[in-house]
Structure formats: structure tokens, C-alpha cells
Amino acid sequence: MSSKKDKKPAEELEQNAAQQPETQTEETAAAEETPNPLLEELEALKQERAEQEDRFLRLAAEYDNYRRRSQKEKESAWADSKAETAAAFLPVYDNLERALKQSTADEAYKKGVEMTMTQLKEVLTKLGIEEIPALGEPFDPNLHNAVMHVEEEGAGENTIVEVFQAGFRSGDKVIRFSMVKVAN
Image 1: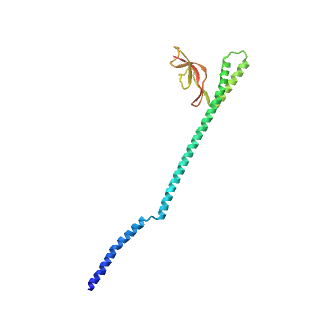
Image 2: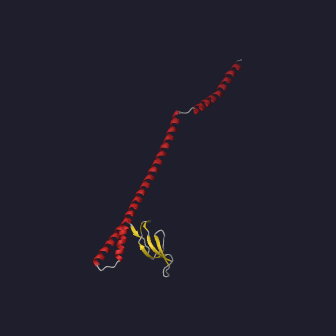
Image 3: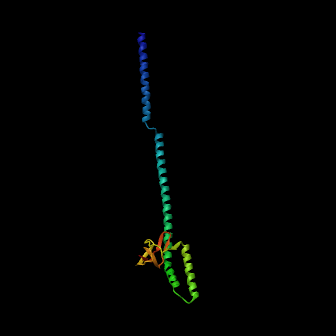
């Protein structure tokens, strides 16, 4: 009998030992399933940090774009105002050019007109405004305004043979087109 009794407690110990790992794994699984509040908070903070960083980068990019756009607008406004101011002086240039073409007996008068014209050209040059080359050049509708067409054997095809009014540009922007006569 004692051997049967000994067997029963041994069997019970084995069963208990076999049940213990299951209980431990169940407890471990239960612990893994129950969320750890610190880990949840950590994940939430990581997500919030990533969102803040994304917002910061977007804001920095937006500011950089704004800065470039405002700089470009400022330069454009300066170029436009410079062109408008120069356009207001171009009739004076035209009148001085006509005065230089007229013959006069008064040398002092002629010298004064030449000096005034030279000074006006210098001011335009300092502003970055240059005369568009036209006479003898091929016709370019982006720079020239053809008001007459003539058949002339000595001139090449689409060549400017006469300039009625000088054109001006500031960089790539045309302030006034050259008014020209084109041959062939």
C-alpha cells in the first residue's frame, strides 16, 4: 500500500509540474496582452514628436518659399519701376536725337545738345538700360517693330535697313521696341 500511496503523490507532483509551465505561459501571455501604460505613453510621445517635427519641417519649407517669392517680387517690382521710369525719359531721348540730326549754324547750341544726349545715354547705361541694336541686323519680332517693308537688292533677307525710333531693353525685358524698315 505504501507504494501505491507513494505513486499517487508522485503522480500528483508530476501533474502539478506539468500544469505549472502552462500557468506561467498563460500568465506571461496575459501580461503581454495587457498594455503597459508606460509603453503606450512612449509610443504616443514618439508619434507626437514625429508630427511636431513634420510640422516644423513644413513650416521651415514654407518660410523659405515665402522668402524666395518675396525676393523675386521685390526684384520684379524694381525692374518694372526702372523700366517705367526709363520709358518716361525716352521721348526726351527721341527729341535730342532729332535735334542732333538737324543742321545748325550755332556750334555752341550743337555742342550743348550733344553733351545733353551723352549725359542721358550715360544715365541709361548706369541703370542697365541699353539700346537695342537694329540697323543692319536681322529682323527679330521680339525686339523690333516693322512699320515698313521695302524691296532692296543690296540688302539681305529680313534685314533692317532703317531705324525710325530706337528701341531699349533692360536685361531681357524690352522697354520699347525698335521701329524699323525691313528689306526683302
